[in-house]
Amino acid sequence: MDSVIIRLSECTERDIEKHFTDLKVETMQTILKRTLSNARFCYPTFDYWLEEKVFPDLSSGKRDIVFLFDVNNPRELLGVAILKIAGDEKKICSFRINSTYQRKGAGKKLMDKCFEVLGSRKPMITVPRDMSQELSDPNNCYSAFSNFFSKYFEREFELKEKRKDFYRKGYTEYVYNGSLPIELPNITK
Image (cartoon, rainbow, N blue to C red; front, side, top):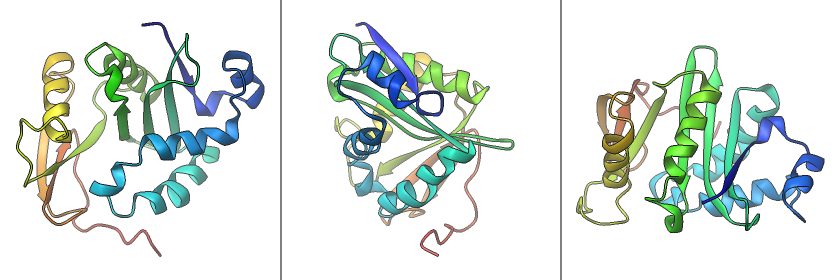
């Protein structure tokens, strides 16, 4: 699988057009929203967070977005990660691999790039688990990440806490390499 990684913070519309015919910077936000659309289920305020926190923080350098594209099919997004780089805080806020490319090396390649961009092999990440879902369910985020972590990154991710009902009732947030605030900040203010 030939792929190329693009950091949104380092590219211009011209750079993208050079690598990906007919793809424009403005469409990156649309691609990101579509790719991460299932996050709304686990995180009810996801769209607000994306529009009001992530996109504005891109220009200040507090966040970056890393895209992994298929070189042979430039419209095929293999994976995407939203990163937070604010002072000492180094966090993988969202990490998604297209289901077609899971278990084919795309996740490892994207995660390695996240480590490079963040300047840390031990960034914070949280993973949701729907407590009503069986661990063997292929749609279970927690199960997929647990397998991924244990296969490739066992030394990098240490479970620090489990927070029930933090973002959504019925879900437990598994927190690696960090901790969540006592209460969920009211992001709609």
